[in-house]
Amino acid sequence: MADKLIIFDTTLRDGEQSPGASMTRDEKLRIARQLERLKVDVIEAGFAASSNGDFESVKAIAQAIKDSTVCSLARANDRDISRAAEALQGGASTRIHVFLATSALHMEKKLRMTPDQVFEQAKQSIRFARNLSGDVEFSPEDGYRSDPDFLCRVLEAVIAEGATTINIPDTVGYAIPELYGNFILDLRQRIPNADKAIWSVHCHNDLGMAVANSLAGVKIGGARQVECTINGLGERAGNCALEEVVMAVRTRRDYFGLDVGVDASQIVPASRLVSQTTGFVVQPNKAVVGANAFAHASGIHQDGVLKARDTYEIMRAEDVGWATNKIVLGKLSGRNAFKQRLNDLGIELASETEVNAAFAKFKELADRKSEIFDEDITALVMDESVTAEQEHYRLLALSQHSEMGERPHATVAFAAGADEFHAESDGNGPVDASLKAIESKVQSGAELVLYSVNAITSGSTESQGEVTVRLQLGGRVVNGVGADPDIVVASAKAYLAALNKLHSKNDRVAAQG
Ligand code: KIV
Ligand code: ZN
Image 1: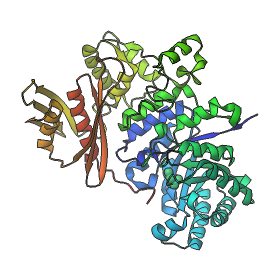
Image 2: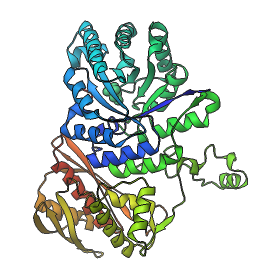
Image 3: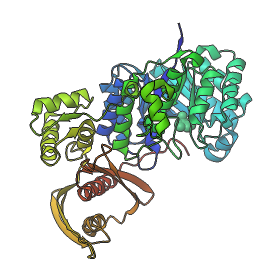
Image 4: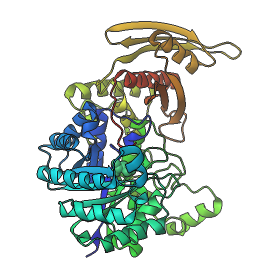
């Protein structure tokens, strides 16, 4: 029997550390449910001690998820570890993930601790965590840039204290595949009790090698857990992309000889959900989940694929969840059919009130757009007026006038808590005028650092426009996403969604730095 490769998804923790990718508890819960459908082995749900919001998210996910292990990150101190255990309490299968930096640079400059102090703290923290959980992972942060002798000393000690998984982070994405693979192999060979733990890889993508490094850690180093995120979401250049690792190991099973438990047909729905939730658009040429990943443009390729698919395709689009756009519902569809479709898409709304709100939005959309696709439904439930959580600002009405040669003008009505505002402005274009109108009343002072529009379903001007707006204010970066067949309305929704995030002051402690 082949060994199993454990897939540890950290989209909701390391992925969320991406500037602007912060998610609400309900958004995280929705993604966690999709990760469970994807059958990932471990879901890192957050960093419970970092904020009350994170604590509540980890707690909600631990309660809801039954088929994947739910994990919380914790710094190597009693308070963080207790908080993680508290958030995970009552979960079907849970893990505490403790981290402490071990590189000379981090110990001296960041922690201001001596190696002996770090050694003691690592040991104590794992002893403490093991009293609270039978499943404890230890990560020496910046592990790859740590002195191997010191690392051996620390890792041997934490395994002796009961750490069940040892994860070697390449925190800054500095590794080279062969070197990283051998680094892990060397540690495993030198540490006498190495076989008492599962070894794991955790690679960042600063040099574009996160997936290659992770795979080398598996192949050369013998790691049996990969830490990764959907779409490679993560700080700076991101983390190792789950979809790429899973499909590499699957497609080249002849080389890796490993089994992965993931249901690959859920990959594209997971990718879409994460992209729509965070506003991080997937580049078209991204492996596996990019819109062009299975598109053949050149005549020679098209001809080849028509004659024999495997001339130019090493994976089948449908195996990773690409379905040709299907018209799933229309204006005559009833509430039950709509609810069933939500179920099929793995979307569980928290209450019947939310289902009703979503259904009302669906009817509204179906009146304006004859064909409703799965992507439209996913976008619709992203709308904050459906999942009313944290909704302070809400778009009520918008009208705008633009004519060639004239300066566009917009009038916007929106609610802010119990108050209603009517605002107007002109602008360089109708979108500019609408956002300026809103800003004239809200006066957030936030800087618009990104504005992007994408068609939700490709290939048609009838598609809904999905707009991402990224705002920056006093060191905080938030994304807002809005969808509508009218891109000016979508833009106003996205702007208000971003303002809602700024409004919900959910500051947290960073896992690194
Ligand atoms: O990159 C890193 O070092 C981490 C640890 C907290 C595991 O994300
Ligand atoms: Zn990381």
